[in-house]
Length: 372
Image 1 (tube, rainbow, N blue to C red):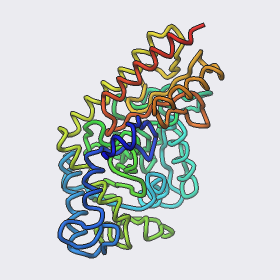
Image 2: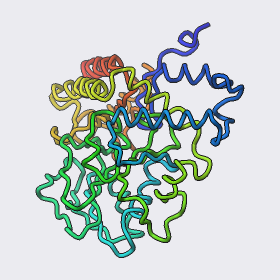
Image 3: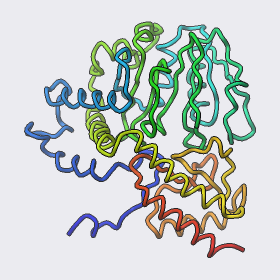
Image 4: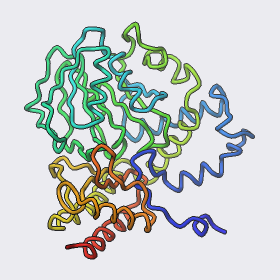
């Protein structure tokens, strides 16, 4: 009996850990017990082995190719996901007492700023809004020129906010950003940034791994309190093998990166992201208020469509019914984050366009059957 007959197709819209391409899972399944000619699984393989060295080297090579990473940037693989890098960035790029600039657009950039405050003086360049529904124009940001770097989060997974126009680098100040939730969903000019951080569990693999892309000149001046496991100099000198890394997560990342390349690269990922999100937002915008997305259309996320059912603050009964009906159709992960409520459809790289089409049709049907 096939997997498809045993398990009806599930529409996975989880915000992370997120959907992995079935082609990637098939390869991982085939290689799970015996990786090629090694006689053992990657799960039990030494990170010092020739086989694993080839895996991590291939992962870096694929990432460099996909993002066109310049030679003066290092690629590091680390524990702790994106959140671990919220500490690693201030500990590596500035010294105690230094000022750093943070643009706050939602929960994750706020968490990054609070982590940095443990080690540095944080200047929030944006004013705190009552609700996160847009991104303040960069021209209004209060950037401290003495800041050692400028940090922002490219996509706010919880609020459904994304920068549609890249932040303009400030001369003499490294630009750093967290790409965890929209990593590899569109081309990026790496040379504009001092460092890029991203967890892999949404668009580039499975949980347990962070990728850091950092410019050479920013490596080697960590704070004395920086743990070795977070120290970019240590990670770089040991080629991300200072201690036992998340070996299987790196292997899965390599398979995912190869899949992205085979699908057409970042231009194709960007094309699909635009189609998927447009399918959902078009229904919302044409629903006459039955569905409401309060985010400024100019900053709507392409990967996390967040909305309410029955009005701007949502109708509790309607939203409960919506989630029940969605579950009957094998939709998973569509309940909004507990801090904001409502509905959230997360559509990362592995999400087929057809899945977004199914959601759009469900939205229309549910509206037709539940309008008062």
